[in-house]
Length: 199
Image 1 (spheres, rainbow, N blue to C red):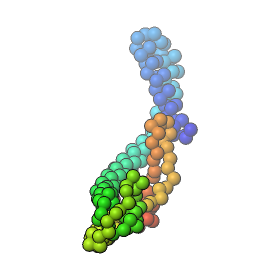
Image 2: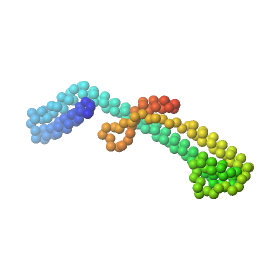
Image 3: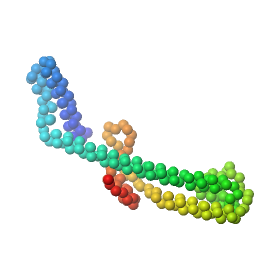
Image 4: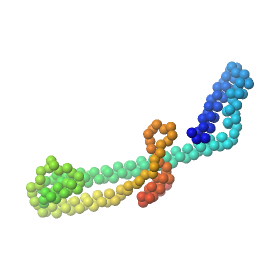
């Protein structure tokens, strides 16, 4: 437990006792001597300017940290959205490749047919081998494959892997969320060559 946490807990406990004592004193259930004794610790703690300043500074620091976490979480949400868009852009390409693989007779050999299936991760055991050899369709297919490979290379070139810094969890939090310091994330992004701007 930090000094500031202990101070806050002591002030809260003393304030609760002082409030109860005030209510009892006003209702004439307590003498002035007992009332003053019950309120003494609260008065001592709240009269100390250093105590008040320490609590205010701790509150301001916590509020700044919460704001940094909000900004960082917003950045992660944007990054997640962009990655989902990238995935959705790749899906039609994969579907087109599967369609090409399943179009029997368009490629000049079973070898090309199976290679295309392997390239795009299409499982082929249920597909019959190609029976027709047609050079014209093979040339067209090879052009389509080259175009698809180029598009995949373009999309994959936009993907960057970032090693995130060590995470931490907030004390007394049961949310299970993991947090990162914003400066550490900024440094990791910069180290990975990602250009970013603070707002």
